[in-house]
Length: 396
Ligand code: LMR
Image 1 (cartoon, rainbow, N blue to C red):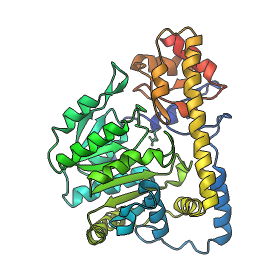
Image 2 (cartoon, rainbow, N blue to C red; image 1 turned 180 degrees about the vertical axis):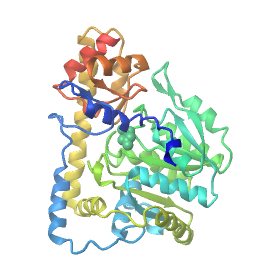
Image 3 (cartoon, protein in one colour; image 1 turned 90 degrees about the horizontal axis):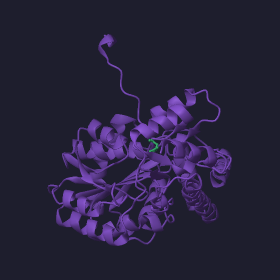
Image 4 (cartoon, helix red, strand yellow; image 1 turned 120 degrees about the vertical axis):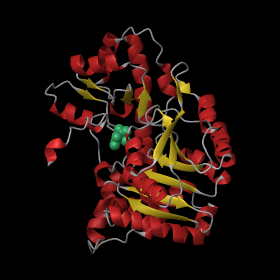
């Protein structure tokens, strides 16, 4: 029966990690998958997370199932992070949040909810984007279309192209937006551009769906929500997929959230009942630990302040690595100007390296980056920067 199954191609990001693990070279460098590494090349557990886990170890009394949407406390903390504690959305209770297994789980819940309720058939996705977006929305039965986002000429946002393409969308279509730290380009709209996009989407009656996986990695936890908060002024309805993999370093706990913003508390109540049936049919109810850690940190002012510091620590180290990367390439004699990389936000940099150059980096030098030329700057350290830039100088 199973003989007829043909092999799937390796995942462009996680497949690369597998290949890296199987590579026996000791000087190999993994800048593929987006995970934060410290100067020692480790992905540490945040100090606030360790403290929260200690608290949970002592206070947790049961491993009973959570409800389908997870805990209300977690939902509230997620909404505070997204909209700010004083936002009218919280007071009016017109948003509902479900705990989800990672940002991917949150996207899938949202996509399935939209498809099953026949709210929308088509989702507009940036070109380029995180490769898994197509699979997630496709698996939920949604049609995908692309809008221009990146200009290889300016190495910046193709804002005119983006606006022109989104102007072609039909009323009711969904627009997937990266809340901040666009994956893979690291290029975000300015506040002025967010405003134009929010108005355009409102005029065209498009439904915004924010993928918000890097809150805190561009300018700050609150600052990075500026685009999303600006949208709330023009849109009564939207969807948000949050992830705490990166900003809490809780990668393998799979902790994320799906938030549905509606026009009223009453609509939210009814619509959310269908979000719950979607969840029940997928994984019944969410895993508890990661969300309990996030809740414990966010509801304690001291732990929350510590978390904000630790996010800053990660963000600052990545900024330093961007600058060092540009300077070291120059010192290695590379004539092309890579200073655009210091304009990009978050973990990733769209380097402009070709597929052939990416393949040579892997085969000849053991340097792993994603085929699109996306480099995870979060994996660069003082000790691998030398060999990394020497290898890039050679393939250029
Ligand atoms: C990435 O883009 O590297 C991360 O979001 C990890 C993943 O699941 O692909």
